[in-house]
Structure formats: C-alpha cells, structure tokens
Length: 186
Image 1 (cartoon, rainbow, N blue to C red):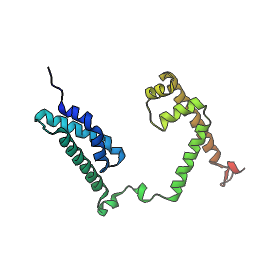
Image 2 (image 1 turned 60 degrees about the vertical axis):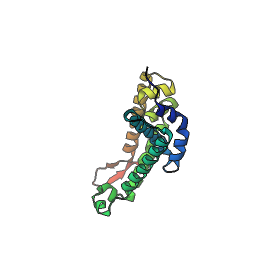
Image 3 (image 1 turned 90 degrees about the vertical axis):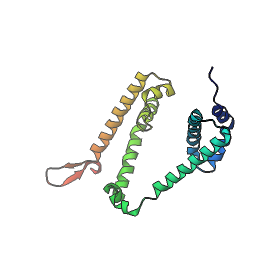
Image 4 (image 1 turned 180 degrees about the vertical axis):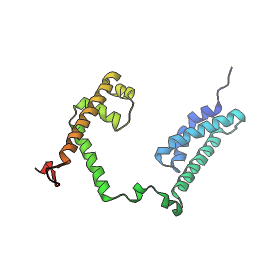
C-alpha cells in the first residue's frame, strides 16, 4: 500500500494561502504558475527527504520562486545600452510611412473579412487571427472539422480575391506615353 503524500494534502489545503502570498510579489498572470511550480518542487523534495512542516516549506518555496521571477524580469529589462546598437534595422528606421501602410493593410483586411458570411468569418478569424487549431474551432462552434476546413479555405479565397481587386484598383497603370495614371482617380 502506498502512502499518500503529505505535501499534496497540504497543497490542497493551503493553495489559497500560497496564492495570496505570491500575489503580493508578482502580477496576477504569474501567480498560478509559481504556485504550481512551488508544489512540484515541494513534492520532489518530499521524495528525497522528510518534510516536517509542509505548509511552511511550500510558502517559503513559493516566496523564493516569486522573488526569483521578479529578479529575472528586472535583469531582462536592464539591458546595457551598448547592446542597443545591434537592434534590427526595421526597428531603428521604422518610419511614419510604414506605420500608416501597416494600419491601412489592417483596415483592408478588416473590410475583406466583413464581406464574409457570419459563419465563415467567425471560423476564418479564429483560425487566421487567433491561431486556433481546426479541431478546437470545430469543438467551439459545433461544426465538423471538415466544415471548419472548408470555411477557412472559403474565407481565405474570398479575402484574397477582395484584396487582389483592391490592389489592382490602387495600382498605377501605364498609358501610351511615359506618364502613369491612377485608375482610381479616372
């Protein structure tokens, strides 16, 4: 007969207290991860040695993990200025023009997705914007994976067609001379 882990029992009993203790050190997004890691480390320690005061051991472990997490985050943000000259050229030379173009492309994409039917749009955005797997989308919206795949393909085809027409309308066209004429203005 195997004995039940006392660390596991203590963890289940004091999980809320551990989370409160860690919440005073780290942000809300990191609390659960740190508490879970504290349990794992405590459980592993129990396998190698007897822990007499499980609650205290886990609280101290969780506190140390949270402090280490904060220290790592601070070190990551304290990058020396000497390293700043090796930033990618795209970040250093990012211009207003590129920013406007990016926003314009996003607006065109939004308009393209607005042309889709509601079902196709929902599936297409879940796949292409949120990066969900087809199986997960199928479960979420209550469709078969085959239907999800067809909706994604249809959305891709219709959006591509919309954007291609849009770029064709905006492209300058050569006239008989050397001058160019913008079709959208003629």
